[in-house]
Length: 96
Image (cartoon, rainbow, N blue to C red; front, top):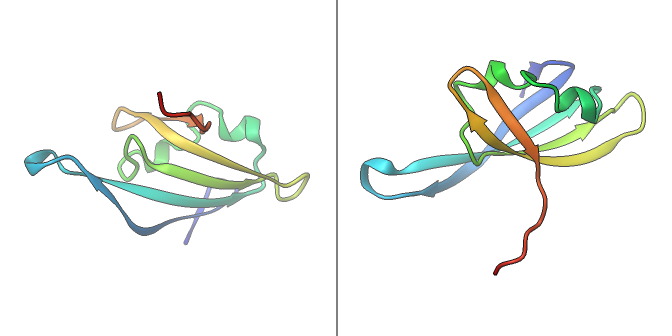
């Protein structure tokens, strides 16, 4: 665990591998507890300091607004340019 923004974050578990050969990628899950609310978490640039560690497809479970009205959210890293991380609120989707 380490300090991050207005809380603490950690990467946990062994992750999930996908792809083959030289294209194997490792996805991670993150756990984040913060006093930031949902709007602050979704602000552009919130996760940019972790751009070198987060991959597209990583999930982030967030316990937010811990000094107000606590809430639990799960986000997925939807883009990472190497310096800018974009997250999207996870939603369940049904198989087609």
